[in-house]
Length: 619
Image 1 (cartoon, rainbow, N blue to C red):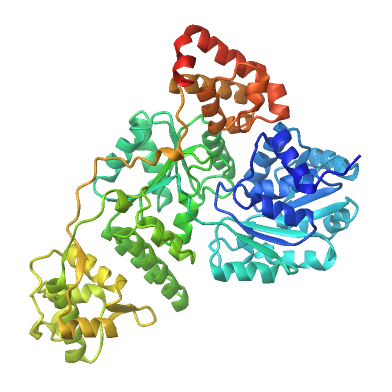
Image 2 (image 1 turned 30 degrees about the horizontal axis):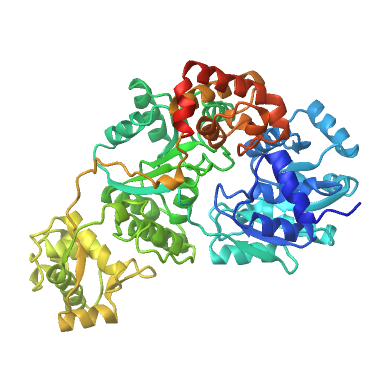
């Protein structure tokens, strides 16, 4: 009997266990290299299907695949999902009592598992390493691999020890996976894990289903409340800067009839776990959280992520917004921006004792402010941060592309701003920061302006046509456009660049974005139709309720039963027998056997009551 080609076998496993007919971007190539026994580095965006890259190869060979993950909550969800698909998997971490841990060890020695999830702290214990050698390990997968780099946004010191694994298991293939990493972090991952001639796969950072929007922060609670009320059946995350803010916001939302809970590092571990589980199991719709929430949250149907306050850096913002729309369906990402929040962040940065840390934090915050105030396509700015070029003139799914900001001939205000920088430097022999330049333009009588004689400059009090926030916006745009340099190594003082000096001297025309603070846009961004699945919303709601009941009975999150994508395809295609249901994405062999009859019955019952529905939606 002929031996099946490895990738033909992989496609068979993809359908049988995971219920999918096609691989996502780069999955097939990554799996092929892994099956060939090679080291692999894979950078796939959140929701891009990283887990399948090591889960599927584990099913095609003997022995066990060891997955190193820092995320206890994610381990349980991953194992629940694998078991629901008929795959034998387990995890070992500090959440298990001794009796349960002993049971799992016994099954590991008996060779009953295909995949083992383990935290890095446990992995490097000498006794555990001895056990690994007896369990017929065939490959290692390091998830959240950016944690190994000091240059990453989520460095974990215990990850550094993983380099010893290569010495202990020199002939086994390694796979490193992450959803976010700059060029510097990628290089560090390859070095620290001692990957041998790895094949690197880097997918686009673009998440086409996410709609990005920045709104002027006014009465922010009312802004958030109105948005959440417009999505009564959807799950969302609201990120807040402080622990107190999460509690206050969750309380006020509950007072207005919204099911909301808080999450932050100041809570007891038990309370955090309770609130997280309530959100994952759809018992509450909204979680108000600090950045402590999110790593390892595998909930695919988060339909919006809101930032009540400006994040510290773009990498964190990208990671947090990436928790929306992991199922590929449309989702909204909204940031409420105000210059006051920037000032508060700068004050926190000033309190740091380490000068280098202060400079790095300022630089990261400037990048975040640039993103927030830019009139460019949001995608172009985000992807550019990760060294990816966005060439399309209009992404069609961000506020700046859908509602371009008004521009004007800004030559005169630009000349005033740059002249003020030149005159201050000429008169004093030193440079100053953006706020002091604005003070001079507005004729301020503050102590430093008077002390340094800047009230005697020709540019003093020539900027009354704009308010302070508007001049700050103009100044920051001139920095973004390369006319002014903000010197991070010297207290963020402003200096004219050669381009700025030339423009000032030659009076070159300069186009600027209208700096007036815009009113809140009432129009909600409508993601492109390609991002969603049109279906019978009434039937989708019925199937979602059925899923929730089954999940509650089994003590698992609803998405472990079926994803929203799967339910929407059912509510679009009306499968009424097992063959039709097995054609739906996400319905594998085990789930067809376990849940098929229940969902088919629900669909048939709906069609009996609404016979016109099937005709209409299948027309």
